Image 1 (cartoon, rainbow, N blue to C red):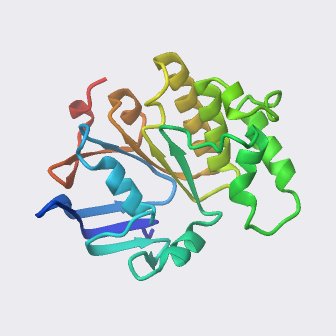
Image 2: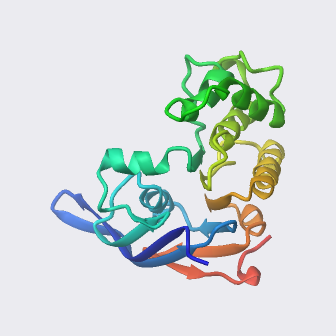
Length: 230
């Protein structure tokens, strides 16, 4: 089986004043279809930077990176967006819902550039599946944090993507609400067979994934279950 996501010798360098800082260095990674992978690391370890590179939201300084068999560094911004369209979903820590759009309208956004005339029905179906069937016409400010994250999960899965990236998906939620969102995320992941890549500092969440990787000093290493505290 070929990897859905492959990185070799990946590096990211930024300039700070007169200094060049290596955030990621000589990083290797393979993610295969249908698996769930957690990337653990302390604050400032570069987890979100790595996720942005893997998703094609940013470009590496060096190294090889392929998504769905396509070289991401060889594509321009429009090319990377075209590659992601309908095939990649995102769940962010701060939800990233548009404040002037309803829950339904936010969920419809990933469908706008895709063919088909049943977009409304798909968005309504997924909002109902995440328990927001009665809240579709509410604005984000009228929803709780947990409800906003459920909208974000519905938006991520509405295109039935092959791959979903989640960046600290419970970071702004209390433990009870966060647990419900994670249960939902893994339930939808299993039902749809979607590959899931999670960036988190939550060890309890990481232990639910098929594999756990630790990011330290800009490099990834596999973690045994015993190394990931409950």
